[in-house]
Image 1 (cartoon, rainbow, N blue to C red):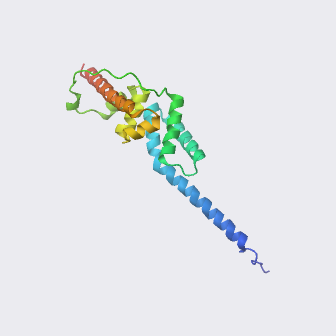
Image 2: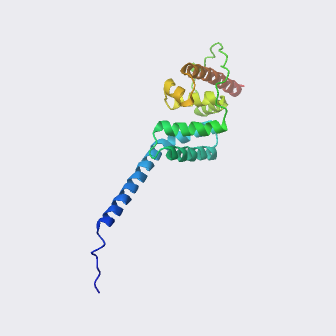
Image 3: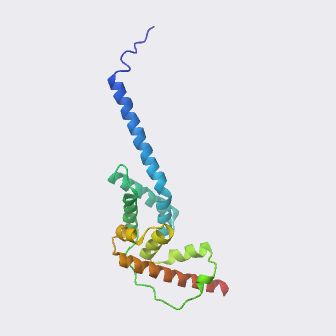
Length: 179
């Protein structure tokens, strides 16, 4: 029995192989994009929701939305998708600034990570998000301003207020522990 392989390697076959190779490299690029941003997006989502399942859902929705917008989304597109998801869960508007009080001496003490995480969860959503973006993820105030579509001066005030509020919450936690 002889097999006729003459037609197996014509130009159509080469075109199919090239298309398959391009599809594999697109999928790999998308996988790389996902892998390089997933931890940051999940972390922000988790700290905002305090719930692992909701954070996973936000993560998934953020990437689905970002990949629908662009085949190879950049960090701004992915961040915007996350913010859109957070806006559906939280009222993300600046809160009234925290009152400034006398120093509570908290800067001289070691803060337990669990206490800090608890204090962050108690911040109003907008302050929590601004604080997480700036002090945890390292975004500049300018970048946060663009991402949240709020004037930079408002972001600076929000960050100041968040830090004051955190100090007060941490002082309360410490006082409760001492009592």
